[in-house]
Image (cartoon, rainbow, N blue to C red; front, top):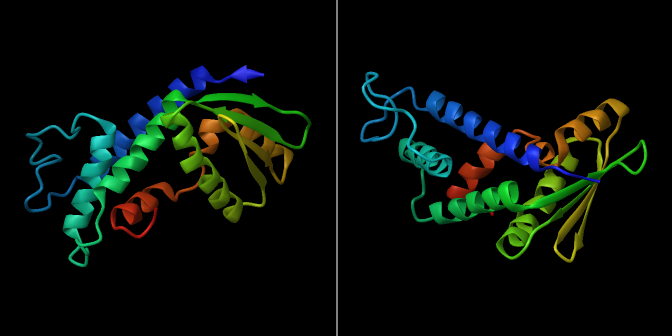
Length: 189
């Protein structure tokens, strides 16, 4: 068994760098009234914190979309999800094992708010990934979190999942950004 503390740090740094790059890329054009982003190379791009940057990016998209239904918008729901992401990534404990040559198991645990984040995010993410792959994914609730068993469709994918670890698995799929926008629009929880 191996505790993936270095993976947590590496994944967090990659997420921060990626979100900062993506935020900078998506804010190259100035939207009237927008106070974030670069204007004639005179202002910094980084708003100071990645969760704030994610919220600012979504608010900018909502403001730029004339069809936004402001009566349904819930930035608080998105913020709660970002807190869950932070709790899961930084404070959960993950034990990884490969009991045979067909599957990988992750035991993901945490206390209080971290356990809440685990329960909020992991089962739903596993469901989405299983719908878009040929992998067998089982999530079982345990006292302090979940046990995730992944049985991929090839030995190559098994090696990939083992290399990615649990936190890499949680990044699989390009649904995260769209999910954040839908959550802020009040259409997905």
